[in-house]
Length: 436
View (cartoon, helix red, strand yellow):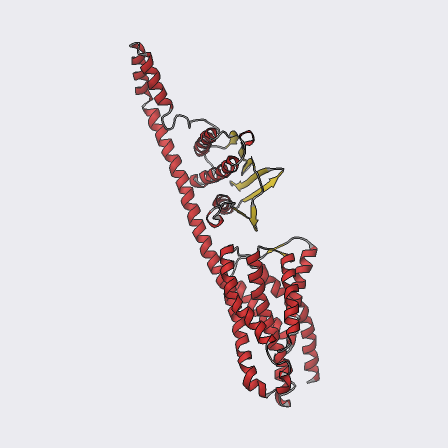
């Protein structure tokens, strides 16, 4: 028996250092890590404090005093916005604190039960080993249910989950802090009366917190599908509009012989004014001003020509260099959406600037199996970020900022990358797509 207890103590000691790693894995499903060794130490410290906290019923000191330290360490070690940080911290803290309260209560109970079953009760109440086993099982369940490395959940979903997470969070705090601090002197009678309901409720708090974490990802995935559908509709709309412009241009070219015949007849008849009026009408016809050739690719030419005309109307200087062959391994709607969204974002930023600062520079090149896009424009202030996602400065940011998300989504679709940076008052969109 003594040897078995000795082995359990060694395993218990090892679990006190290993169990925080399972908590870090669970946190990493929802929060983005900050780079650097110091940040890593802070993350581990937050998990270690949670996993090694001793929580007895009636002793409110440990559970309440450790709470602000854990929340602060999580905020310093992870890159996250307020709602995500607070919600995930509450749910993980509830799960770990619930296990601590259960194991420590069973450990206390082991001294009041008959000798024959004391070993088994002590085994269940083995502080850190039991917590490590249960948290490892919870971590494996999350990894199975949530196969992605990290889930991006919107601020709106986290705010909703924050309200729902208050129930188990306040429940565990109240269960520990409001119990008679001398409950152990009442054992085992207290277990059969007031303590038993608490020991039944604590597992419910644990599984409720775990279920809420899973629910957040379900709602986040649903939002992601809605965004992808909206981006797909946006891409198709762009492509449809450009196809219509190309059709108008083809019809105009087809009718050009008839137009030249009419103009020739008017000039031969000495009707100079009528000829000039007829020519002016042709110049304003749809498709005439959208025929500039930037490269061999028809989609690129059409998008750049249309955006160049729109920028000219807004007083935005536009410099574009494009080297793209007629055929590339990027679907027409996707290529159209990439250029259209990047230039629309640049135009929107320039619209808020004085006329002398309105300028957009574009470079597009397909070379050596890589499509590289670079769009630069001045901006008044750097956009806010939620992880890698850029947030719109409009009043309804949840329904805006889809342009950069569309660019990033198309880049990921083709195994490429997209990056958005601000330096010296210049916003830069960089995109790389493999063409092989």
